[in-house]
Image 1 (cartoon, rainbow, N blue to C red):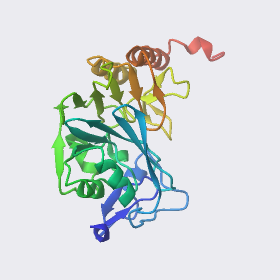
Image 2: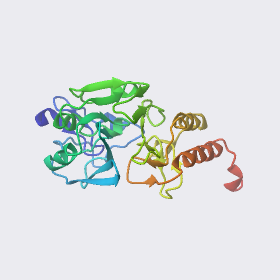
Image 3: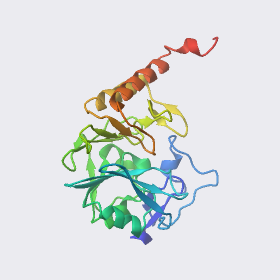
Length: 273
């Protein structure tokens, strides 16, 4: 399969090798960017070291030490009923595949949005043709349709105790995954739908993170209302940042703050008009 694929080194997303476009559509979109060095297509990254590390009991992160892609920390929830992968690394190695296999059978691979497609065809094939569950609203962004592609919308329950749903926002099909957690307190994996800030106490909501495009107050309130259905003490976003306690309340407070700022309620703090 490797010969059938190429990869954009900027976003890390796979594409059919037969006729790659002149410019990666995902990078050319206003939410991303084309490298200042110009567009290239490369063979799938099988060389960058990938570390599997435990984030908390039952939750693991896959960290790629290389220059390909956005640098997401893919997550694996491992339970007695099997595993799910949320977001997909932009590299794949035999050692990383073996480490993930050792956690248990992979029941589903769920990219939160198109930036996180990574090398999902290769990971699916390496993990027993695990279903690749792509939001129906985002199917147009696929540069390659995985053999085990499973379009979905609404609610997805790949294994007991794990629920995926689609609040949208960053992309129309942007998804989150709720897991009961090893301690029962609840964990939300939010990708780029809800981004944990460096203060590890608040979150952000953006259409584009690298290009700093905001979402409206109405959309942010919709996202906050969507995730209010879940009980969660901890939240993890796309990279390594997380809020370790009272995360559900932090999301609601942050949504209210965002909505107030974009409505102009704090304009008096910005200086003379």
